Length: 301
Image (tube, rainbow, N blue to C red; front, side):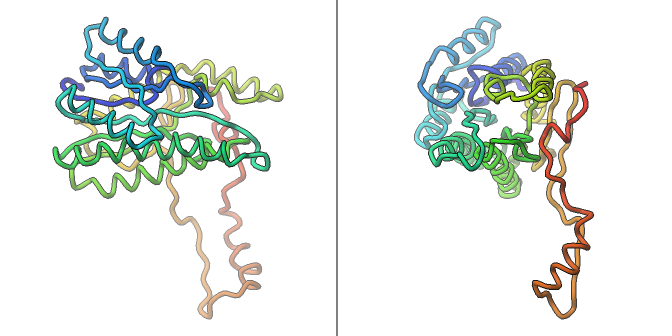
């Protein structure tokens, strides 16, 4: 499916990224395994995780190279893409998976925690995409797969920084899809449900949350990789600007914001008529204040 293609996977030393890198290599892709090797909060660095994934790929007969750059740094992202081009001769896909968590309730959120998460998730996705975009334009093809989250699409407690970054990635992906369609480039998002070290850091405060965590533990990271491989293939050239969710053996196509109700007054609006007319007319269409677990309330298939 991916024979001869070159793909960069960020955050590929562990978890979801690792399984993606292994499957892409098994499908014939040459893979750059990027991982800074930091903690779940983004602290520190360790080249061992990326090197180990490369060894696994090579032992299975595939081709891979390790990269230890920090996606939040544009220079590192550009060097990553240039190394992939130099090593493999071209670049065909970028999988923006790298991420960290610094969860805290909003009124206790620190500017440092906000900036750190935005820098890795949102800025990191921009940096690698920006570095690859000129190569995709010149060759008239390319695939972006970005990782978003239902924390941004729907909501969750204590994740304002993460949710904002992940919903920002949706806007980034949609814009890339619009701007680069003329060059044969696609851009899509995946919101994964899978147990990972990041999910393992989310505080569990009651039995309901504990039960939800147990359900997530059953959803292994390797369930995400097949959709990534499919979106990177030539056969998905007409799939772009979309948001998918993967939950164990389920794949969902997520809705995107569109008008659901309207109200108008020929004379225009005052604050008083907004309260007496517009808001009551639209109330039945309001989106409930739900969390991800409220929407995906049934056991995974």
